[in-house]
Image 1: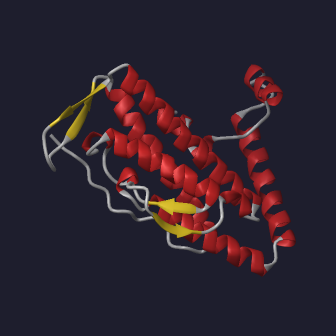
Image 2: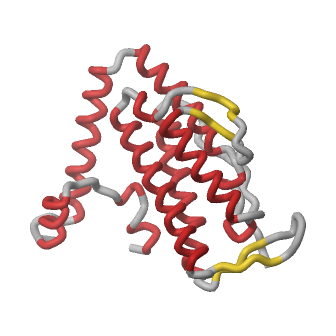
Image 3: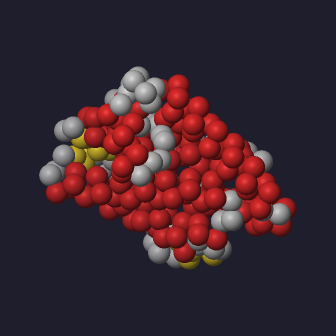
Length: 210
């Protein structure tokens, strides 16, 4: 299993600290097939509970919120290669604004101008979707943390002027991590769109090559 596959959403199983330690220390009893089977059963049970508990009205409201959140990610911070970012300060602000939009329902531009307002992710009635947006929020927060560390350690440098600006990371794996993490975020969001009967994400992506 590659590092990307290991940390992917599909490979994730959310457990408490005690249970996660238990399965990690007894791989003979808790095999990969067993864990994946438990995950599938748990998800199927959750879906049945959601379908029984959430009337059509709640589904429609959740769907509207998902559509709003999709708009929050339709911005260069989730489309451009990290090496092609114009200003890392703007990138950090865009990630912060996206976190705020998920939490409060207020969507702003990089300049701080409020574009739209809805409700935050806590208003989503579907527990599976709500959990996925919590995962997305955690990954967004990790992007900001890693960026601040990279800035403090000066692990990237800026080259070019005007519209031809790109960044070089002295730690290439770190730069790739930013791209892969954003791709993973969009993959989780796309899975919610699919479950809501919406089109999967197809944001335009610009990739710098040299």
